[in-house]
Amino acid sequence: MNLMYYLHEPLPNETPPKQQQQQQHRHYALMCHKNEASRIRDALLQSSDQWLDISIESAQMCKSSDERSDLSVTQCITIPLQEEKGRRKDRQGYTLMVIVGAAMPPAKLMHMARKQISWAGRLSHRTRSDVSRLENVMHSNHDHTIMASVGEEVWKQLCTIHGFDADVDSLRFDVHPKSFNVEACKAIQQAAAKSKGKELSEGGLIKLTYSATKARCVIAMIVRQLSGTSIFDIYWGISTGQQHWNELNQTMNDNATKEILIETTDSVTGLDITKQITIPSETPVSRAYYKLDQVFDDRDNLHVISCLHGSDCSVDMLLSHGAGIDIGAAPGGWTQVMHSKLKIPSIAAIDPGILAKRVATLPGVHHIRNDISSNETIKLLATYAPFSLIVCDACVDVASLFEKIVQSLQGVSSLLKSPNQVFSWPLCLVVTLKFPHKTSGSIDRHMDRAERTISDFLRKVMSLGCDEETKVSDIEVKYKICHLFANSVAERCLIAVFNKASIT
Figure 1: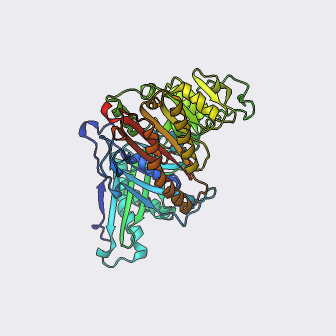
Figure 2: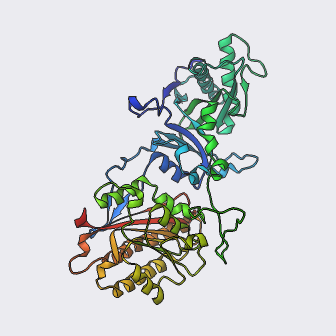
Figure 3: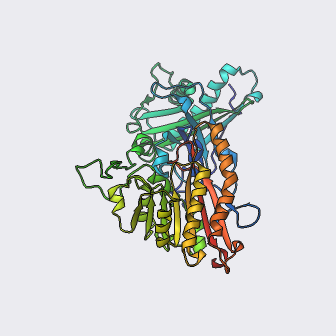
């Protein structure tokens, strides 16, 4: 049968020639939880959330200087898996993605992201077909025909590039969607038999295995039909068993979950629940720790704050020029990040609840067991001002939370000799926006309401840094809303940075 209309093309390599040896594989196939798919995609393509600028009358979009240009939609292809179900997992809860031109390998993602990836494979080629140009080819035959073409090309590369020997080596074949598995395996077996001048036996010439560690090579293959067309794309790639396991899948799923360290404490006493060993003070006391940790691991966030300093500086120097406020601090995960990672010298941890003892006893941590807007809290905060970092992960309605933060800061300002002593510039504000329901429609509605109040909230905070010498127009504010890996489905994170424009 004529196979001339099947084109095997290498996926584009945008890496400079001098770096190609270190970054040969920049294309991946991933099976990940559908709720995390967009976050994983954006992280691999380094598609940063855009910053909004409200320092002028009408908000406008602004980008950090090293932000990547708009990304083509072809760099992330999603293949639906509606009909597939595994024995242990409902595949309807997973998304299959092809990432072309990834800025980093999946293994470099933070563990909170990698634990949501159940499988990953390397890709290097795409084979495209157009059945409308093939005469006398029935649709039932077409899948096998393109598979035959791909099988011959894959077998050729296995032998010539990877030195695969069917007599001694084993092969693992990962095909998605699984409905194409039989055709794909048959195609590679036929290609092998044809090259040896043999008839295809029932067991096949190639020994197949499920184990990546036992396989000499692993083939990853993704089959996709373009919607509303007769064009099929098959993305495929070959890696060694060691590459597939040690450099990719060994760091995914349950293995990534094991990397997430959390040692919880008693909510009544604040003592560590695990008593057999002494737990270091920097060990996270809650999962929430990883929200703020990601904020200050993000290259784009660090770049924006560094620019406000006028020069690059290390993460522990970004905001250590002032005190910090942690609203809704208990059991103390965010306070830990502020202390250990950001080196904030004095932290007011506000929460009526119990702070973990190993957090409450950290140098510079002051636990205020009261509400953020109480008179007692405001008086104490005035003794710690000025502030360079204000964070909040409290479970409070967004509008009420904004109102309480502004009310408290206004109270602090009224107790100080000069109103502009509330903040130490630059100032960073990080707030978790928590919505009551997890349905997409409800999240969208609450997100719309929150967005309508954010600009007004930030302007009120900004006004607290003004006096006779400093006008509102002298202060620049940039903010963005992102979905962190440690955020739940119904959470978003507001990050805002403030600075006097004259400083930069």
